[in-house]
Picture 1 (cartoon, rainbow, N blue to C red):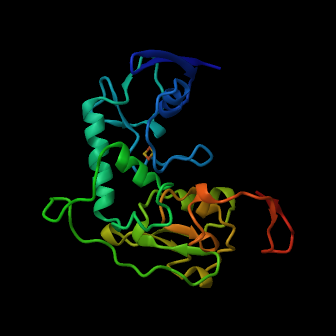
Picture 2 (picture 1 turned 135 degrees about the horizontal axis):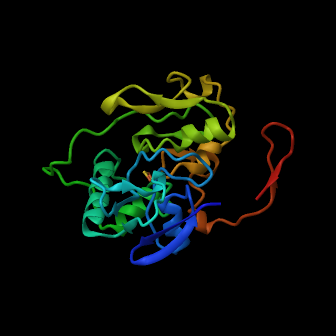
Picture 3 (picture 1 turned 180 degrees about the vertical axis):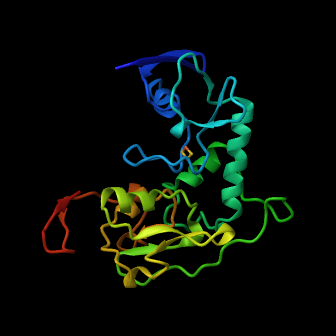
Length: 241
Ligand code: FES
């Protein structure tokens, strides 16, 4: 297999052609933050949090969808990279409920983690980024999943998990512009859609937009004890931890 040598943050690395800059950086132990990337899903490069500086490129490049090139010189923490990531996080927070203290995902939310890591707070009133926030009612129509699209960052991981892992294609992007949201079967409540509550979307959601209703109010994930159990949903009796 063809090999490509490049430099990331001053370190030379040789990887297979076609490898992404993100994967090459991670092979060196370099942390590049991500929100829409999952190694088990196709990458779409939608959140832009993983941007890096590539010498000679006219714009910052999303590391998760940029393939390595011979002689590439990449900086993952250049000042303009950090500034861009801070702006991206602030833009996401600008249309996100300011309820981290009580959110079920507090402590396991990737957006919260990024905000802490980059020292970004919710835009104050008067900030150029402060503005209208979505006020959609949460979808509590079914007993398994709670969907709160006000906390969705449109990373699309749930859409890809539904399509690529389960071949269901229940979820998709709907509407346009500020009204864009993830919809189930042309914007049905989950209970009226063709969702089978497999939970694939739940496992990849980076924020509190999708929650397992059975775990709500039962403590933070690190406070819970994991036991082997039998799922009683479909009668097959699958066991999981
Ligand atoms: Fe690369 Fe979202 S993680 S664009």
